[in-house]
Amino acid sequence: MDEQLEQGLEDLLEENGELRLTNQQLQGLVTKLRRDFLQERIWRTKFQISYLEGLKAEAVAELEELSRGG
Image 1: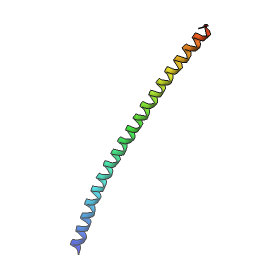
Image 2 (image 1 turned 30 degrees about the vertical axis):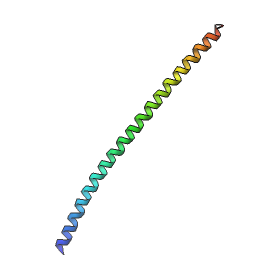
Image 3 (image 1 turned 135 degrees about the horizontal axis):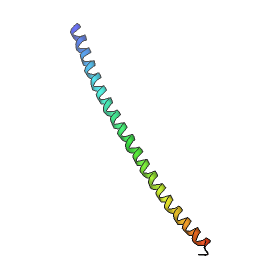
Image 4 (image 1 turned 60 degrees about the horizontal axis):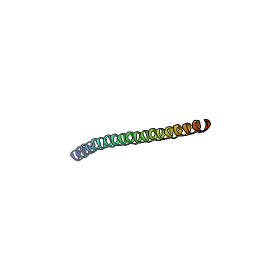
């Protein structure tokens, strides 16, 4: 009986170690996905800002031209 308990405990410890490793790997993957997602959002936001700055510059130029009697 003691041998069965020892084997069961050993099996549980091994399984626990495997689960911890799997958990660490999944946490690493989630961290990478979050980082990638945030990088994508940053890129999109920068692109939108650049686009809007271009529209603003065009509008300012058009207003200046109109104010000069253009």
